Length: 320
Image 1 (cartoon, rainbow, N blue to C red):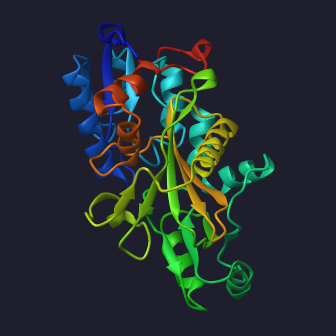
Image 2 (image 1 turned 180 degrees about the vertical axis):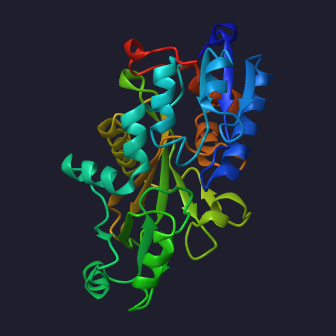
Image 3 (image 1 turned 90 degrees about the horizontal axis):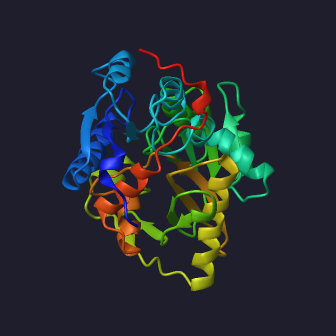
């Protein structure tokens, strides 16, 4: 894939932000910035936590690479601001970003489209926690609906623990999910492009050394195992890739994303969640899948950047 670097113009790499995933975003952003500069792109770091939107509007960026994780960067709010400022950006648009960040609503949409998701319940302070434990079985997982990187996630293994797990998750979000445990393994599928060019990269199997694939296992531990090839039969891998592509399409995603998939003990795959601005650190999975497909990290960054665009150019007001 040949990309005219000069045509990309002046590029802002949006990193950091104010979410619970700031530290990881800074690591991802530094890696992307270095790769783009290495390829001759006129790229510059921009941290919205240190400079406001007025500064972004006045920075003269021709396009931006959004590598902000979590709220304020991956949830549609920044994408809406960029639409109004008329600055083309990488990744999904306003609606798809907002839906992808919200695990509850994305599951509802996937269910409506006939796609498989693990059984789940939305929890509230007045929920019948004992009834939820009986309905979903133990163990089960509890998580904030609108956080990433396993922030606030708990594994409930014994009766009566659900209420405390809810309280932990509720510190991060007003929406909390309880989700059935599936014991057949965890996988992830990176998806690039859109339309006829939509591609699913090789599947990765995640084998954490910890109780589950938590924040430490994702970003800091060296004993988490990532298997690519994932050890699946070719037909099973193709089925999982097709499921990931359909999950991406249904939410209206574009550019790139990573779809996480759980498998039950019979080998049936279920959609867990989607990340519309996935990590790009040295522990991250999209670069790993790209390497398995013969795509070097620098090329991956250029491909994603070259697809930056606006959803609604006619709405541009050139704020600033």
